[in-house]
Length: 282
Image 1 (tube, rainbow, N blue to C red):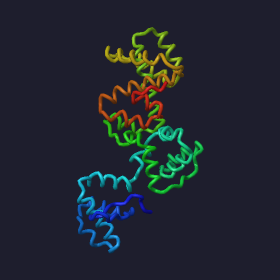
Image 2 (spheres, one colour):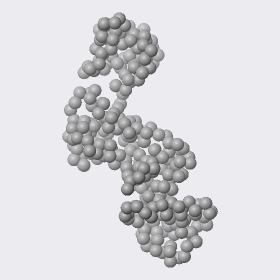
Image 3 (tube, rainbow, N blue to C red):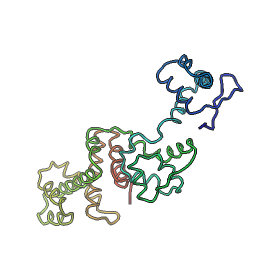
C-alpha cells in the first residue's frame, strides 16, 4: 500500500512515491547508523527510491522532524502499555464516537480490550486504508498516552502491580482508615454508627484506625479529607469511602513523584481515575 504523500528527490521536480517498506529500510539504516552505503545491498529499483528519500532527509534542515514523522507512520500507533489500562478508559475515549470509528479502533486493540468493547456492542471490524486507520487510532487514544508512559515512584509501582479489583479494594481500605483516623478520640457510639454505615470488612479497618494513636497532623488531615467528601451528589457509603481513599492516595502519590498520579489513575475505573487526577466527577 502506498502513502498519499510524495517525497521530493534531490533535484527539484523529481517527486517520488515512497512506500512503507522503503520508509522502514531508511529508518532502520538511520537507527543502526549504517550509513548510506547500506543501500548498495538493495535491488536497483528499491535502492533508487531509498536513495532519494535518504538524500532528501540528509539535505533538509527539517530532517529531524521528517524522521519523527516517518517513524510515527510505521510505528505502533497504540500507546505502549495500553493493555494495562482499566478498560473503562478505552470506553470513555470512544464514548459518543460513530460506530464505524469504533470499529476501526477495535481492530488495533489487544484481545482483552477488544473483548471489552464487544461486550458493549462493538464487535464489528472497521475497513479503511491503513494510513487512515492509524490516524484514527492515534487520535482516539492520544489522551491516554500519559497514563501508559508514566513511570512514577515506588508507591505507584506497587499499586500498579495489583489487579484492578485488588487496587479498588486497597483504595476502599485506605478510605476506611482515613475516616477512622478522623474519628480518633470520638465516643464509642460514634465509632459504632460509622462502622454500621460502611459494613464489613471496612468497619474493622475503620475501627482499627480510630483506636490507633495518631499524630495530630495525621488526625487533622484525615478530618479535612472526610469532611470534604460529605457534600455533593448522593453516594453510597462505599462510594464515599473510595472517594476519601482516592484523596488520601493522591496526597501520597503527589509527594513521591510527579508522574505517580497518572500511572495509578490509568489502573482505576475512569471516574475514580479522573478524581485522582483532580477532576470533578459530579
